[in-house]
Length: 324
Image (cartoon, rainbow, N blue to C red; front, side, top):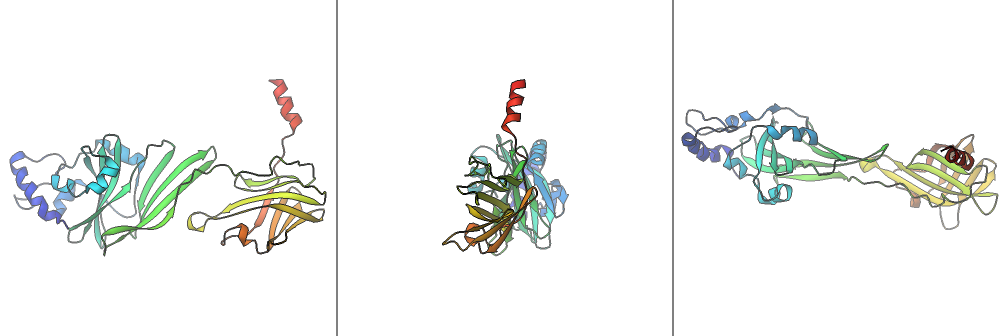
């Protein structure tokens, strides 16, 4: 392990002849440059601390750190995948003191690439490890942010506009383990470029009085279409509940028997699932009466009320086209 106070001694001696450069730590009476002196160029911050991709870009003109001993702390195994093999500029972003560790946040940039790096030191100022706190991507549709909370856990998050009214989100959570001098991934919720849910019965006839689309949003809906027998309806259900580790989805396509003018029940041989669809006015309510676990996650059930979406008539659509 490197001891920063020790390695800075050699550079302090070299600085005596070359003069102090911008961004370097000041010398103290010609003696060894201390950890505290070196970190004077870093703005002080407290937890929780957050850095975003837009804020990182704004620090492009910040005074650079010009200390070879500090630069050497970044191993090639981290540097090359993030920044390539070219020269890297280092700029101070923040210094954070916690009861157990000291953190230095540094902007590292090479060419068009940049990253926010988190350097970890123990309370005796001994260097422990470096972690890529935030690594901006080249996609203009994404926004990235990294947060260090009061307990020291790091959440790296990313959001992306998938469609006009739909945002996709992803995150990773890491914690520092002093025993191994490393960060451990404890949770991941990947960003998914979610596409529209394919409705397999969308093109089926919808002449039945109950036929139509009952929609909360594009990922939570019930579609009802005509079946071969007037006493039955075809249906397709898709729902998504929760986020992250609590996310739960369900999907079921089948035929339900009308037990009354407003109630249909799905019951099929070999499938333990029994599902009731109760129609009332312009909505449908789902009630799972027997276990439908094979069609959904374990943390959710088929339930809830879905309002009926007003159908666009072919006649009105033709009229609009004729007026153009």
